[in-house]
Structures are given as structure tokens and as C-alpha cells.
Image (cartoon, rainbow, N blue to C red):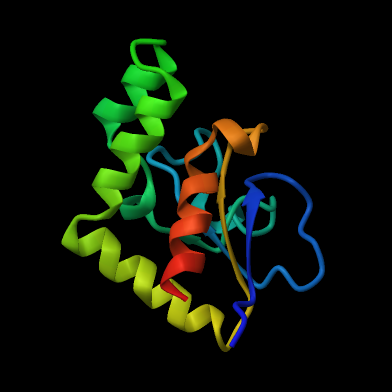
Length: 124
């Protein structure tokens, strides 16, 4: 059974069939009331367990590690029990209902959501 799943940029206009938009970000948007997250096309649900750790995110953002090292370490973080179980849950849900995971990054190829999308598809 195919998954009804996609990755998105948080804040980009929603597309038809996108379904539940899950924010897989470590930091909540500043200055935006929680009641406005969905209205502003940010996300319907915040799931920081699927975001890179603060340490990993900071090292990558500061240029202390390469993109390949960032993705390698992020995969390791997602292989831990709690994130792995959430990934399996999202894959199971996506068999039945549309959902999307997102991050702020403009360039998906340099964003953790590219890896997260692969992990969810692999779990499906």
C-alpha cells in the first residue's frame, strides 16, 4: 500500500491533498501565537522529537560539520527508540490518511526533512 505522505516547507502555502501538516522543528516560531500556527500555514502539530537535536542543529548551522556528517548523525538520532517508534507510527498513519512533515528550510536537499521523508517511506 502506498503512503499518502509528503515533505513540505513550513510557511509555504498548503497544497491540495497535503493532509495533516506536522512541524518537525526544534524551535517554535517567535512572535506567532499557537492558535495561529495552522492559519499561517506553519503546522497543525508540533513534533520536535523528529527534529535534529539542539547540538546537532547548532553544529551544522555554524558550519562545524558538513551536510553529509549532519545527515549521518541525524539518521543515528532517528534510530533511537522513541523517534523510531514515532516514524513507524507516521508511516502507518500515512497508509490511511494524508500527512506531511515540514521544516523551515528552503532547500530540502540540505534539510533534515529529506532524510526524515526517506525514513518514513522506508518504514511504510
